[in-house]
Image (cartoon, rainbow, N blue to C red; front, side):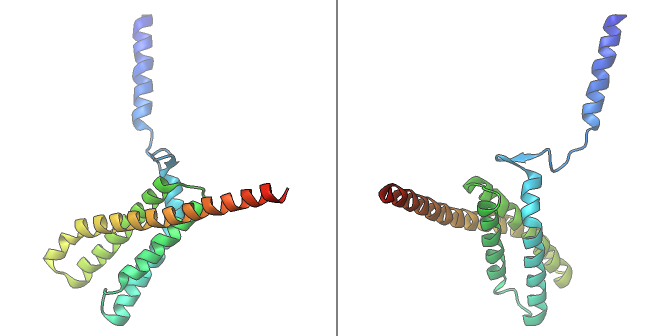
Length: 164
């Protein structure tokens, strides 16, 4: 009887684990939770996407949309480095996720607005292209920023030693 009771408890625990919801706070990328990345990237993504769409309606072109995207990636990279104390890995992941979403939103807009079947394939290609561009822009910004930070830190420590 005790074996059956133990077996029932194990089945009940397994059922509870299966029912447990997957949330942003439980999934990790790198050293940070997915919630960390979404807190940083949600407003720059929305702003860059809205600017791209508004610019398209004003100029009837997507020629310079990359400028707005790159500015958003630089902003996200600086936010991760300065406010959240992330490294290059976290910057790459944050900018990559931002690029994935920005590319997806713009691809959906193009598909709906132009109503061309070949733009359906853009729903896959554009998010991945902006993912890699965002990630590499983020790594470049992180590399430059962290290099400058280390250089400034060395200069400050050397002036303290020399001034004593």
